[in-house]
Length: 92
Picture 1 (cartoon, one colour):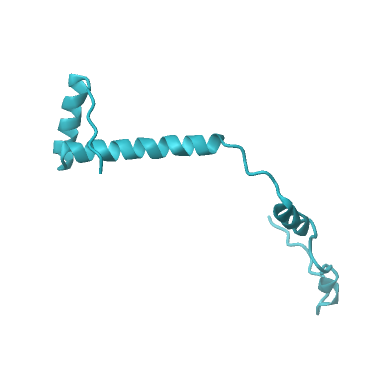
Picture 2: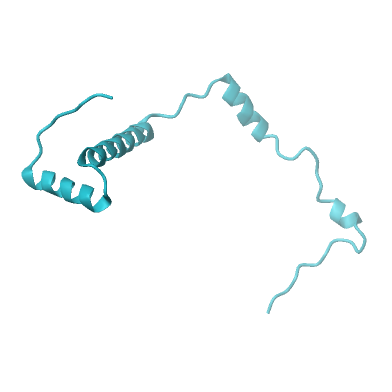
């Protein structure tokens, strides 16, 4: 672990100490967790702005499979079921 040192406004340093006391943690732990949360947020924002991976041959193959649709036509099975095709239900 690396030791970081920085200057902060007196009111912010007081607020950090107050929150640490309220939460029952050391001020350094509060600041460490806050720094971590902020870095995670920044990384996710950068990731969201990054363009999607370009489509390669493998991804293109998967896209073509998705375009196949159903392997067989099943709609005619309802006609051959006992009683034929069911009538739509009316509400009201």
